[in-house]
Image 1 (tube, each protein chain N blue to C red):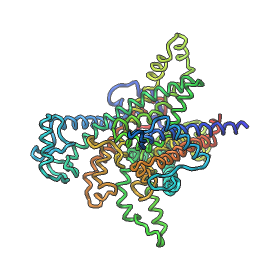
Image 2 (cartoon, each protein chain N blue to C red; image 1 turned 60 degrees about the horizontal axis):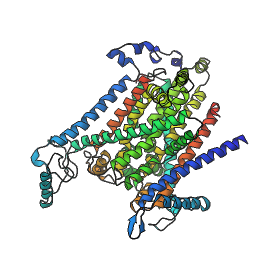
Image 3 (cartoon, one colour; image 1 turned 30 degrees about the horizontal axis):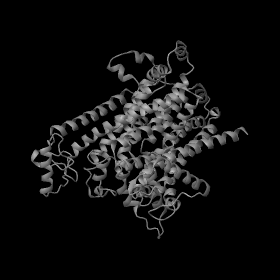
Amino acid sequence: MYELLVMKKKFTYRPEVFRKRGIRAFFRRPGAVSIVIGSVITILFFIGALYGQFAYRLDLYPHSATEIQYDRFDSPPTSSVLRALLDRREFFEEEYWYEYTEPVEGHILGTDNDGRDIFIRVLNGASTYLYAGALTVLISLVIGIFLGSVTGYYKGKITEMIANYITSVLDAYPRIVILIIVAFISHFNLYAITIALGILNATRIARIISGTIESLKNTDFILAAKEIGLSDITIIGKHIVWYNCRHLLSIQIIYGFASVILIEATLSYIGYGIGEPLVSWGRMIYEGSGGRYPFNFVEGIYWQAVPPALAIIGTILGLNLLGDGMSKMLNVKQTEYLL
Amino acid sequence: MNTLRKILKEISIALLILIGTTFTIYLLLGQLVYEHHEGVRTTPSFFSLTADYGEWVTDAVLKGDLGHSATTNRDVSEIIGYGFRQTFMLVIGSLFVSILIAIPLGVAAAIRTNTWFVRFFIPGTYLFSALPVFLLAIFIRPYWVQSFGILDWYADIPLSRIIGYYGIPIIILGIADGVIGEMIKHVREVVGGMVRENYIRAAIARSARISKHILKNALLPVFTIITSRFSYALGGALIVEYIFFSQGISIVALDALKYRDPNVLLAIGMIFSLLIVVANIVNRVLTVIVDPRTRV
C-alpha cells in the first residue's frame, strides 16, 4: 500500500514527453511499444495479402510447375478462355485424386485435402479479409456518423427519437443469429455478410459520436460557430467529427477490422461463412481439424489447422495492440501506463 | 408515482425495441419460405409478411404461443426449451467466471503498477482477448472428451466429472473472445484513476480499508461491458455449445435454417433479443444502486 502514496513521476502525465521528437522520445510515450508491435503485425498482414494476390496472378507458387494440377476453383486468373477450357477438359478426362501432404520442401506448410498449398491459401485469406474489413468499416462509419450526429445534435426532436430508436434496436439484435440468417438467404455472399456486419457495428460509433456531441454542444466554439452562421453539416462534420472524434474513430476502424475477421471465421467454422472460391481462415480450420468433431488433432494432424489459426490470432492480436496503443497515445490527459 | 411512471416508460421502450428486432428478423426469415401464385414460385411480399407478423405477435402475447415447427411437427417452445436452459447456464456462468477473473486482475494491475506479475500478465490477457471462442474450444475439445467427455447418465457420476463437463466450456466462454481483456483494461483504468484521488490517498494514510470503495467503483465498468457484450456472449455460447455438446440451441437453429423452418428461428431470435433488452434494464438499475449520482 505504501507505494500508492509515493507515486513515481514516471506514471503521471508529463507534457514535456510529448514535446520532444525522435525515436527515444517516441518510445517514452505511453502505448509506444504496443503501437510498434501492432503496426509491425498489421503491415505483415498487408504485405501477406498483397503477396498472396501477386503470387496467385504471376504463378509464383512455392512448388514446381509439374506438380500443379488446377481444379476449377484454383485455376489461375491469367489464363485465357482456351486455357480454361483445356483445364476443364483435363479435369473431366483425367481421373486424379488430391491428397494432403505433410510439410515438405516446395509446400512449406503442406497442402490441404484438395491438394492446395496452405501457405498461399493463408495469404489469400488475408486479402479476402482486407476487402471485407474495408467494406464493413466504411458502412459502419457512414451509418454510425449519421445516426450519432442526429441523436447528439437534434436532442428532443422527432428525428432524434427515430435515430435513437434505430440505434437501440441495432444494439438489441442477437448478432450471430442475424448474421447466420443473412448468410443463408444470400447464398453465402461475402458482400451481404459484410454489409450486415457493418450495419450491426455502427452502434458503437454512433454512441461515441453522440456522446462527444453532447459534451461539446454548449461549449463556446460551437456556439460561436452557430452565431457566425455556419451550417449544421459544417459544424458536425468539420468541428465535431473531424477535429474532436477522429482519434476515437481511428481506434474504432481498427476494431472493426478485427471484428470482421473474428465473426467471419466463426461463421465459416459453423459452415455459414463466405462461399468456396474465396479463401476463409475459419473454413480452413474447419476442414483442417477434421470437420464437426476435430478428429485430426487426435491423429496428430495439427499442421493443417494451425497456420490459419495462428494467422487469426496474430492478426487480431496485432490490430488490438495497435488500437490500444493509439488510444493511449492520443488520449494524453489521463494517467497511463507504459505498456 | 414518479418511479412507477419511469418503470412504465422503460418497459414500453423495451417493448418497442423488441418489436423492431423481431419484425426485422421476421422480414429476413420471410425470404426462406415460398408462396405459389398461379404456378409461379415467389417469396412473400412485404405487406403479407407484415400481416403475418401481426398475427404472430398477437398469438405470442395473448396466448404465449410461439408457433408450430413444420419439420418436426412439435410446438416451438417444446423444441427450444432444453437447449435454451443449457445456453442460459453457459452465458450466466461465463459472465461470473469473467467477473471473478477480471476484477482481481484489473485491481492488482492498477495498484501494483510495476511488478513482474503485471508486466507479464497484462500482455497475456491481450493474447487471450485475441482468441476467438471456437479456436480455443476446438483445441481443448479432444482433452475434454478424454477426461470428462462421455457421461453415463444412468450410473453414479462423480461430481468432479460433472463440474468438468460443464465447467470447461463455461471457462472457455468466459476467457476467450475479448471480453476479459476489455474488462481488465477498463477496471484498470477506472481503479488507476481512482487510486490517485485525494480521498483514497487520505484513507491509505489513515490506514483505513479502501477495498470497499475500490470494488464499488470497479464494478461499474464491468456492468457496462457485460451489457454491451451480452449479444457477443450469446453468440459465443452458441458456438461453444455447437462444439462441445450434442444437443443445444445452436444445433436446433442451424437445422431449422437448413430445413427452412422459420418459426423456430423467430422464437430463438425473439428470446435472445428479449435477454439483451432485459440485460440493459438490469444494467441501468444496478448502476443506480451502486452509484446514486446517476439517478435521474
